[in-house]
Image (cartoon, rainbow, N blue to C red):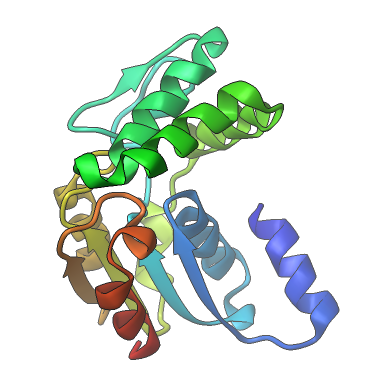
Amino acid sequence: MADAVGALLARLGEPPAHVVGLSLGGCVALRLRCARQSVVRSLTLVNAVAACARPVPPPPCVWSRGWRCWPRRRWSAVAALVARGLSPGPSRAALYEGGGAQPRAHPAGRVLGRGVRALARFDVRTALARVRCPTLVMAGADDATVALDVKESLAQAIAGSRWVIVPDSGHATNADNPDAFTPRCASS
């Protein structure tokens, strides 16, 4: 995925870019910066990780307080768990329903499976010391998908990064609390 984004930036001829990524998108942004430093001017990483927390059986895996793994035939269970953690609270039930139902009702569920497998193999921890661009690491305060301490560790590993916790937001921080999310992104 990072290679595809890098190729697109090269084709557009407009790097370096300010790259914002949420969850898997944050991992793609990190990989892009580590592999092709010259195309990334700054990073905003939202509810992202630097690596799989610990070795696990073959993917898929989902971040939570611990790891949970499912056989490949259980993508809908993975999607439902991730969707449940997207947005906390009963007022966001519609967002959860949409997020959980889509992979079951659409062939895009295979894409989710590939993304989760890629996340399980993702590890840029040794390259984080080379991330030398302005970096904002944002975390949804109520994110049930990626633990807060995992995201804080990412911020601590990137020299000079800014660490921000967005209140009243889960994994879909930008949708949960856009009034807090947007100004923080704009100021980075």
